[in-house]
Amino acid sequence: MAVKKKVLKEKSPSQMIDARIKELSDWRGQTLRQIREVVQEALPHVTEEWKWRGVPVWYSDGIICTGETYKAVVKMTFANGAKLKDPTGLFNSSLEGNVRRAIDFREGEKINKRALKALIKEAAALNKSKLKKKTK
Image (cartoon, rainbow, N blue to C red; front, side):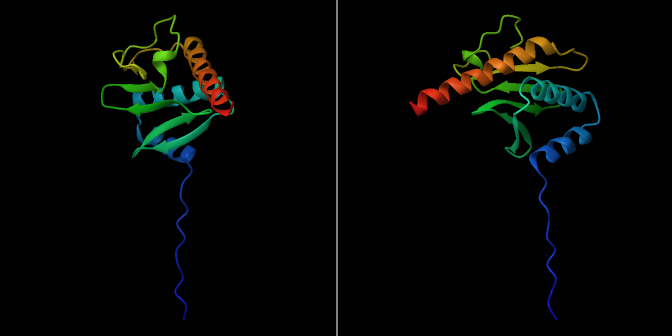
């Protein structure tokens, strides 16, 4: 008699992010959901990944940003944030480094969706320009 093997279907990164948002049934889940929506609106072609033991990561020709959740903040870290223009002053964390920049969202804070979309699009354009330089 053959033993039937259970086939465990692995969840997609998008499903993992959905589950994380649902698991965080407080303001952090709502904030992560809003961040995700803004990223997807800014870059409809964006690729979602699930990295580093539970961090949503959004890609377009390289890492655009991550969405980390902590007790007091939801942190959106831009991989090449130090190279981005931030005329509205969204970046409020990780300001001392030469590469990354982050935005810490706290409970009750509103997301400036227009400015955030512009920053996301700028990050994607930077990634694309870096990719073009590599292929030349």
